Image 1: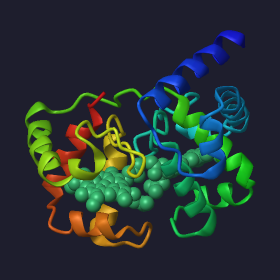
Image 2 (image 1 turned 90 degrees about the horizontal axis):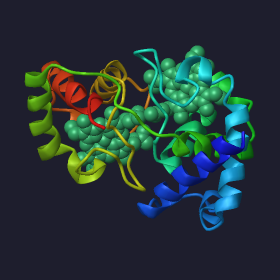
Image 3 (image 1 turned 120 degrees about the vertical axis):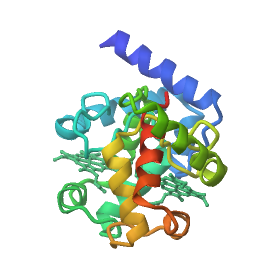
Image 4 (image 1 turned 180 degrees about the horizontal axis):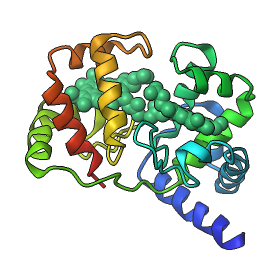
Length: 207
Ligand code: HEC
Ligand code: HEC
C-alpha cells in the first residue's frame, strides 16, 4: 500500500514537472499540494474498482472499443465525465454510470487516471503508420502536440486504442451527434476512411 502511494506521488510529481495546467479549481489547488493530490488520486482508485471492468485496473483498456484513460489530461477527463453526466456526450452505459457520481468523485476519478502511466496500445502496420504521421504533422499536431501527448487544453492521443480512435474520428466527421466539437468536425470533414485508418495506426503505437 505504502509503496504504491509513493509511486503515485512520483508520477504526479512528474506530471506536474511537465507543466500540466489543471483546469478546475479543486484540481488546480491540489496541484500545489502534492499530499492533497495524492489523497485525491488514492480516493479515485477506490471509486475506480467498477470502471476497471472495462478501462483496466490502471486505466489501460483491454477492449478495442474502450479508451485508455491512463496518462490522459485530467482536465479533459473531468470535462468528458461531466459531458456524459449532462448528456452532451452520448453513450448509454457511460451516461447512466456517471449520472450517479458526485462532483467530488468525478474529480477524484480524473485525478486517479491522469496519474497512471500511459502505455502504447498496439503495434501497427508500418506503411499505414507512416502515412498517418504525415497527416498528423500537417493537420493535428498544432493542437494535440508534436508527440500527440496532448496539452492542458487538448486530449492525449498517443497510445490510444486504434478501434476507439477510428470510431471516434468517424463519429466526429459524420456528425453522428454522439459528441460535439466544432474544431474536430472541421478538421475531420475532408478525411477519407483510409486517412482515418492511417491516423489511428500511427497514433496507437506512439509511447
Ligand atoms: C461497460 C464498460 C465500461 C465501464 C464499466 C466504464 N466505461 Fe468509461 N467508457 C466505456 C466506453 C465504451 C467508452 C467510449 C464511449 C464512446 O465511444 O464515446 C468510455 C469512455 C469513457 C471516457 C471518455 C474517454 C475519452 O478518451 O474521451 C471516460 C473519461 C470514462 N469512460 C470514464 C469512466 C469511469 C470514470 C468509469 C467508472 C465510474 C467508467 N468509465 C466505466 C466503457 C466503460
Ligand atoms: C483546432 C484544434 C484541433 C485540431 C487541429 C485537431 N483537434 Fe482533435 N480535438 C480537439 C479538441 C478540442 C478535442 C476535444 C473535443 C471534445 O471535447 O469532445 C479533440 C478531440 C480529439 C479526439 C478524441 C480523443 C478521445 O480521447 O476521445 C481525437 C481522436 C482527436 N481529437 C484526433 C485528432 C486528429 C487525428 C486530428 C487531425 C486530423 C485532430 N484531432 C486535430 C482539437 C483539435
